[in-house]
Length: 380
Image 1: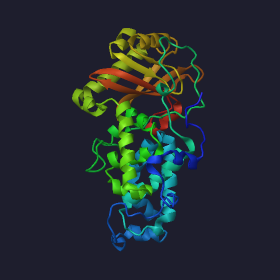
Image 2 (image 1 turned 90 degrees about the vertical axis):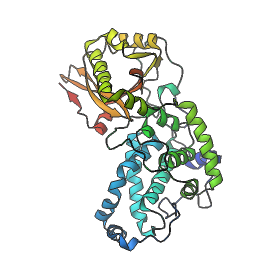
Image 3 (image 1 turned 45 degrees about the vertical axis):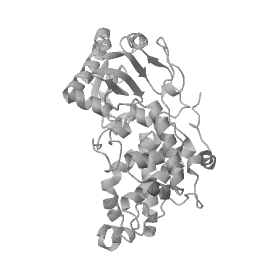
Image 4 (image 1 turned 60 degrees about the horizontal axis):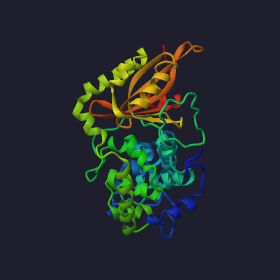
């Protein structure tokens, strides 16, 4: 089973499908080109000692320049690509391109705007080659009963969780619609994956980062009219797939103490094998999915059947550590392994709350996710 666009693709063909943002004469092939993306000219490069040194080849000076922006650039790459590992690679590639092209940076735009241009074009290259990432809900309908022995699908490019470390509740800029945490919520990032790459980039640059349509047109080598058309289409798709109320108002309303209680109660219920305690935490229409397994469950009856037949009884002993993932509460789950005589990293579970109940559980089953969250590989 494959997800459309999840495998290798021809980048030129992928971009040609996006009629909203057709590339300009140069096709955007030079990501390190100094576009005047904020309308300013002749910024005082000579007054920035690190910039002068970096342009002369001082890599330590370049590191000092980009370090304050590294975290927000990484989050932008994650929103574009839906994968922490892909974001790591894309940011590294983008900064290498920026370093190599710094001599061509003439200061006509801010360094931040220029770096976002380089990072965005780098991500578009990745999107063109690899396509979008998916969650189980994208593959088919929910299952009414527990599917035992559900094998992982290795031919699907799966969405991955994103650690909250370094994210704040504030917007990135004054003209943005989304807070940083809102813009990495699972529902939002998953919805972005249904957009063509250039529509995805336009929406993020406008709604999350506060670039104007004219600035985006320069970044994307297209016209303002095309950007506005892309934004209109992108907004319709995202509005159709994202619950109108983001998690951040819910989390603020119920408060940190209550969120910690919910996470602790979930962990305790799994560790004790207590079905009633777990069910008491869930909404009637709760969902539970476990990428890279394709099957997922919707509704209290189906979710309870799955919980009773799999994690509460047949998996063995659990341990949990609380985490913040995608601007939402969650836990790192550890499962007992007899051979290792320890609880080994198993999954990162991200919770979607409605009121003070869990309306969604997404269990990212892969011990490879734990390092990004600073979690240990095992517990006693």
